[in-house]
Every structure is written in C-alpha cells, then in structure tokens.
Length: 185
Image 1: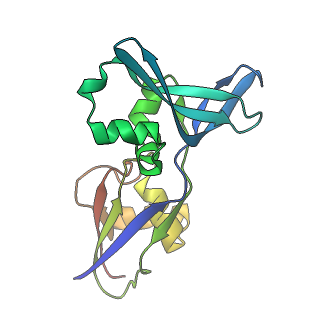
Image 2: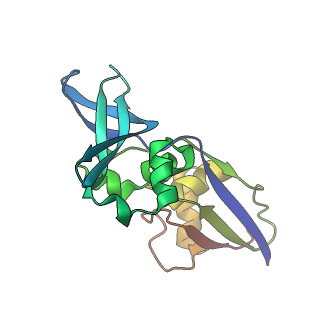
C-alpha cells in the first residue's frame, strides 16, 4: 500500500463574520495581525484587531481580559507588544476563540500540497493541517481529486474510499489530521 501525504497550507486566517455597526449588516472582518494592549493598574487586557472588509472599521477580539502580566510567559508578552506575526496567526486560526467572542467563523484561503492520486494502487492518504478548521475532508478530497459529488458518493458507497476514524466522511471536518484508505479502482 502506497502512503501519500497532503498538507493544507493556509494562505490567510479564517475571517470572523459579525455585525458591523458602520455597514449596518454582517460582514467579514479580517485579521490585521496587530494586537491592542491596555494596562489597568496591575492587570492587562489583550485584543487581536480585526478590520471590516467593507469599511475598515475595527473590531477587537478579546484574547485576555483582566489578566496579571506575571501569569503570561515573558516571551509571549513580548510577542504581544511587538505584534509577532506567528503569534497573531496562532490566535487568528483559533476558531473556538473566534466563536467565544461572538463571531461566526468563515473559511480560510488555502492550498492543498501533495501528489495527485494514482487509482491503480491502494493508497493510505494522510491529510495534515497545522490548525483545526471548518474545512470538510470530503471537500478537500473532491477538490484535489477533481471528483463530482456523484462520483465521490459512489466511491463511498462502494467502500473504495473510507476514513480510518470511522466518522461519516461526508460530514467530518479536518482537525489536525485525517487518514483515509483509497482502494484501487
């Protein structure tokens, strides 16, 4: 059995979808990659700044509220002060944090890196993601393999494609990784 790996490369964090007061409707808010820090005596508030894609008004997504600065690692605190891009991306990719801040999570822009599938040999396919996302495993498969919905469903019904976790392949979303078995046709 041939082993293949596909890596999901995120080109941008997912947008936060929420009501914009200036636009008067729900819009996508994109991560600016900048933090806002406010010191209140002994405590800090830390936000990640998002901008409305239509009007550029800002929304601050709460990361920490009323936290003692001594409870944050010094290098992380320095990352907030210096607007560290990797740190900003880590928080912007945290879909649970976005939801906890009252926003819906949009779909990030991404690329699927990896070899195309040869249907002549059985394959163990590993799909890896550095962040959990809302992307459906079935959508990634259909996109990379250029399959129609009908052809993909036929493969599931016939058992020639299956996920090792036992989850419903049509509904499961990509977490850290997914392992699939694709039999030869």
